[in-house]
Amino acid sequence: MLAAKLNKVRTNAIKLSKEYLAKRSETVLADVNHYCLKKGPDGTQTVFCINNKSSKGDNYEMTVKGFKSNEAVVEVTRCTSITADAMGGVKAWFGKGEPRVFTTAKALEGTGICPEAERVVDAEPDSAAGALGVHTGLLMTVMAAFTVLFFA
Image (tube, rainbow, N blue to C red; front, side, top):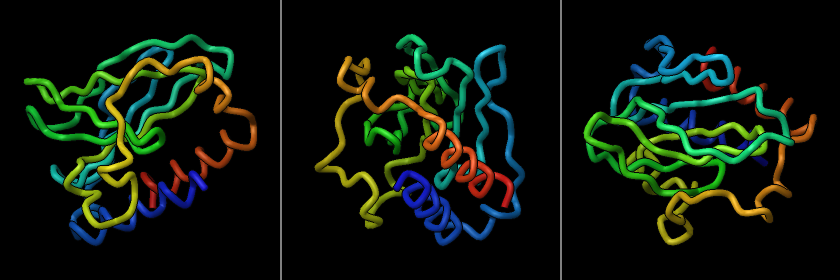
């Protein structure tokens, strides 16, 4: 289901901008625990973040850059709404080793992906959200979707 959702995000980004496929991915964050890539031109960009925290990892908030100042952003794995700060960064909650995929709210209009009525404001994942922790099958699905999203 996650792979299908991410493929739909990518398909829509290509539909909105022919430059999506031609534009190379750029690293927006790389540290000892995280790797985040931005793909596509502004307005249709997708930012994908993976980490090495495992399903037993902690919950933490982190800023991810790649958007315009005050731009409405949606994190599609949790259908959360976030507004970019003055520097184009979004503060988002990470936890349990789960990946995060961000795109502009405008790019999702009319797609059925995270409809506005179903979005929530990003908040620390509660213990119930931990039940969604990444297990091997989900991680493999995410990595396959990541490959399609950024290297196709």
